[in-house]
Structures are given as structure tokens and as C-alpha cells.
Length: 388
Picture 1: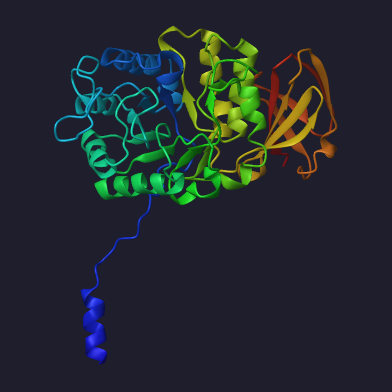
Picture 2 (picture 1 turned 90 degrees about the horizontal axis):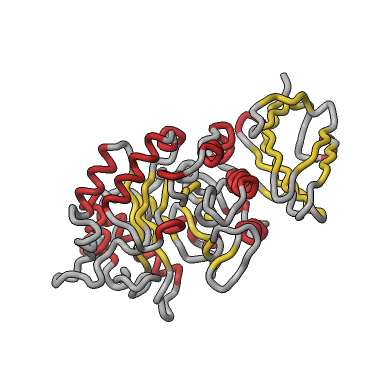
């Protein structure tokens, strides 16, 4: 009998545990995505020009390493074998050649598709073709997949995204998996073992506080992140959507505040402006190494809203080596005076040196109260380091 049981066990099919690739996003991914400025009007020439601009502007050196083609790179139909193919007019060299070009320039290659039958712009989606598409992505040298949630019908979000996760793993190429599910099914509750990041919200647009059915300003998105900090960490990040820094609907201070607070949130930093034409002021925001270091802090703890009063909010983030990032945000339409008695910030223990990250200067210690004016929709961002 024992021999029969052993033989039966040996004859059972061998299954490999489904999983995602580990260690691909120890800190939030940084890069550039085509959607916020160009929509579906993308092509090979534009992507190569953007790569050159990311290099010459210093953004690549600052950490923006992923270049992600969003919706609209695909042909309108799959080929006769059912393969997902690029639009030959837009990308005459093909995806493999473009991936090779970006890799040679020191970038990582990202593409967008959708968990439904069609993408949001009406191109072929991945439903029913997950393993076939994953093999194609691997053959092209793709490093990052943003997977949307249009035309999904009655599909179950968790199971649908797990299918694509398994397909990517089976294809064998480590690919960062970005779930663009818009937060409809609370992915922070189930996506830690599915993807490396997941959208927590609907689409962002380049305004401070507008809101409609299709997109919203970053102020509304910021408010919706309260309470989500406990779900984020290395290799599993909340994604409040891409950056609108430098796009025409935001003022300079609104762009600076947007960037500051996304760094407090440990958000993926995916720029969406036309890097070829950005001003020195916008470049100064996107390449501020000290602010980026807040976002990329290796401790991997997402920040949180510590306090909110009419006209002002305090957002904080615990950092490595006992440091803290503290951001004072003026959410009103008038200049406000901020008065801070540091001992009232209960998470602080002892005395700290204070550095203003936008002024790029040290301003003393927490022994003295801080008093200062903050312009409408602007921030003051500090890094606090324990005083030895």
C-alpha cells in the first residue's frame, strides 16, 4: 500500500507556484510616460527625442530611467497569428529595435496595454492573450508593463491581474508590473503579491483642484491617499498616478507642491511633461536631488497626513537613520503664516537639525520654533536629521 501511495504522488502533475518577480522595485520606479502630454500621438521619433532630452537635461542622471510608451503604440488589430504588434507607421523599426535603442542609451523600456478586450483608446487589449503577449514583451526587451482596466466587462480584477502576473513570470523576463486599476477594487488589499505598484485613484490631469468624470487635480488625489500608507513598501507601492509637473495647467508653485507631496507619499515618479521644452525652473523641480532622495529613501515607508486645519496641512515621512521629512502645505487661496513648535510633533524624539530642501540651506534646529509665510498652494519642505 505504501508503494502505491508513493507512485500516485510521483504521478501527480508538477505545478510551479505563481508569483511575481521579486526585488525589481525596492524604491518607487522613476521615469517618463508619454500619456499626460501626447496621448496617443506618439511615434518612434518622439520617443527617441525624449530619450535624448532626458539625458541632456540631467533627468536620467537624477534617476528617471524608465521610458514608458502609453496607449496608442499598437496597431488597430492583432496579426493573423493573434500577436500584438505595433503600428508600423508610428514605429517602423518595431518594438525590439526601439527597446534595444533605449537600453543602449541607459534606459529601461516600458509599454502600456490593458486587462480588457480593448485599451482605453480602442486598441487591442490583452484579455485572453496574456501568455502570448507576455512572451512578446519579453522578446522585445520590455522592462515595465503598465496594465490598464478598460473594456473589462464582468471580469474579476484580482484574478485578471493575477493571470497577467503569471504570464509575465512564465515568460521569464523580469518586468515591473504596474496595475492601472484606478483603485476601483481596492488593490492595496490584494495586490502586494501581484504587482510592484498599483493605482489608487482615477486619472490625474494638469490642474490643482478640478474634478470631473475622467480626471481630477492633484489636490483631490492627495486627499484620497489618507490611510493608505500602511499598504506600501519596497516592491509594493501605492501609485497616486503620474506627475503633471511642468504641464500648462499648473503654476510653478503648484508643480513644486505636487512634486514635494508625491515624494512624501513614496509615489512612483513618472514625469509626463515635454522634456524637450521644459523651463529651467521645471527642470529644477524634477532634478532636485535632495527632494528625490525623500521619495527614494531605502527605508521604504510611505508618508502620511499628520495634521489638517483650515488652510494648512502637515504631511510627514519617516526616513532612514532616524531622519524625518516634514512638509507644510498651504491648501488655501491665500498666503498663510505657519507657526511650528517642534515639540508638538509627537513623532520627533530629541533635537534635530533642519534643512530646507527647496531653499537648499540649513536653517537651525528644532530647539527654535519655525515661523514663516507659505504662498497659496505652495509648500515648505524640510528634512530633519538627529543632532548628534
